[in-house]
Amino acid sequence: MTALVSLILGTAFGFVLSRSGAADYTYIQQMFLFENFQLYGIIGTAVALGVPLLWLVKRRRRTLLGTPLHVEAKPAHRGNIVGGLLFGVGWSICGMCPGPIFVNIGEGKVYALAALAGALVGTALFGRLYTTLERPLRLPPMQTGTGEG
Image (tube, rainbow, N blue to C red; front, side):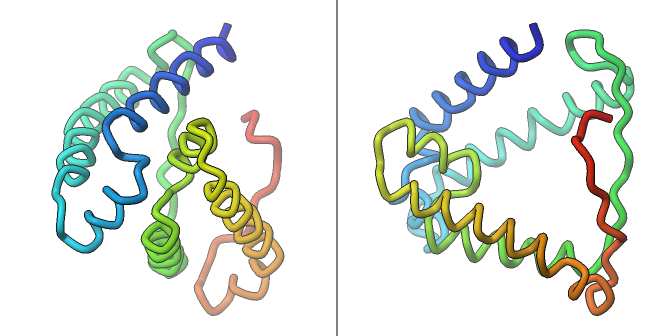
């Protein structure tokens, strides 16, 4: 049941990204060049809706489907700043963050495969370099696992 709900919600999210222009390279570049403010409105609306909904879910300590939920606060460290900068630069250069990569692939835009390859290579490279970066960036020890709890 959960996989089906995730598939339906992911598909709906991708559809909204596609139709709103939030996955369109031109709109994203115009946003970063301050030529078009449509995406700032979309992002602002997502934040305005998401923050109170997340607060409510965390307060209830259950998902919308009733599954118990525990959200831990993540530690702040220099890696958050470095990672945020790298994410923003990558987003600006390729015009896609992770969600829109898959939206663009679904729309048949072949160039999105290069963005996906870059995201996967960057993730793998970060995993390899983590122990080297851990001390200078004061990163917490890496935790590995399945993510299943």
